[in-house]
Length: 306
Image (cartoon, rainbow, N blue to C red; front, side):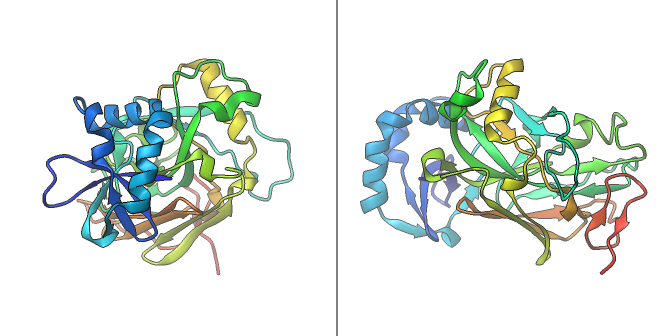
């Protein structure tokens, strides 16, 4: 089941919707009794009570009116997770080596935007480039603490797409460019277009991830290339902190598809079975970088040659 938040000209707040093909079914009637807090709190309650909500949601999916997606505005399915944990690296990228130690950073919840929104590049001149990282994101069911790998999927509610926008600078590991601060500018965390429930995914480490910049394919890889797979990510994250319903673990990216994001671009991510989402890019300073896939993540990196 694909759960989404959407708006129309007649909605006062985002409604819960169920995406089917190129249409959406309004499922607000099934969750109206849960209203009272923020949209993020609503999604967390839906996750917590999904077992009891599911029969009514399935009935709406079967018989509810289908509205074309083109006629609504999708919002981020998780408007403000309390925690976004994102992997550093985590893909083999054709390297012949031992797996690198698993590591993660916290990305600001205020970085989240949704489909059709705009990534706004900051006016700081420290970074040498702003890059896209297309990633599979795990949506957690909590409270999850100390979850062993064998039980990891009991704490996974579903999956969504994330673009981990990243500011790069001289010395990638500097506080601005390599740490969470270079990942946490407002609008640097597009999420969507929906949450695909975990029962619809046979193996999260067998999904194809693609990303386009103005229609040019950049990222094009499978999640079976992860160094540390989904159960290990859940175990690692929950060994450190308690994850709540609606929190996110982003699985890292294959850096072989990195490239600059710049003013006026349309950035699109698609993950097999989950769906496709587009966001715009705006730069108040109107900076430009040579287009293409960049080899490397520090200031010596330049576009790969054809």
